[in-house]
Length: 130
Image 1 (cartoon, rainbow, N blue to C red):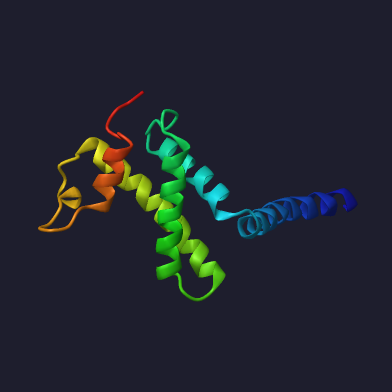
Image 2 (image 1 turned 180 degrees about the vertical axis):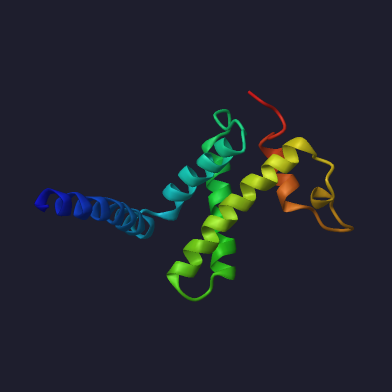
């Protein structure tokens, strides 16, 4: 019976420790590092090759997500972090859409203005595969 209790305690403690570690790291690792890693993970999840892209691309995308999350996630640090993750995920989806359909209406420029997504995606030649 004693071994069973230790097994149950370990089964509860290990996932709890993992969540706690991830939470602590999420708030201690700078966004420019965690954001770039998350962004690469999202690109990989969408089947987008990123090895040929320069570091400046990831820096620019993380800065964009950070700026957006600062604006939308005004208030608590937790809300800002959640918006930061959403912005990174959204950017990966937009890249996948751009690669499959660059003439999509979301990338059209209106009169007198330019589309930020399209400009950034063209700047780094995201249509090409390595």
